[in-house]
Length: 66
Image (cartoon, rainbow, N blue to C red; front, top):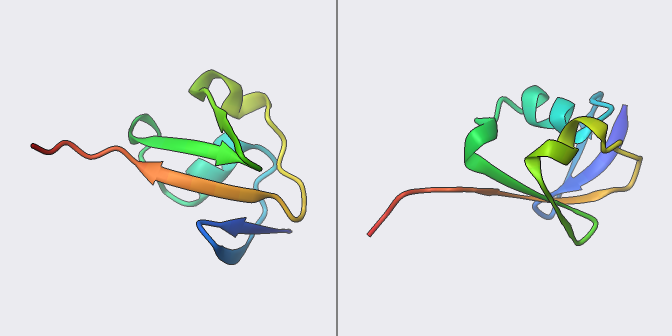
């Protein structure tokens, strides 16, 4: 288990990559943006980007509006 800070709150996850985290959290992958330790990630990078204990993550959901 890794202890991560997600959107300002501590959380423990077993995921090894950003893609695994998105799946573990049950997020709709096509509708979220992920920032890892201040760096915005492309969706194509999620599967190869490892998570480490203490990482800070910001997750934004894309929402349509007007």
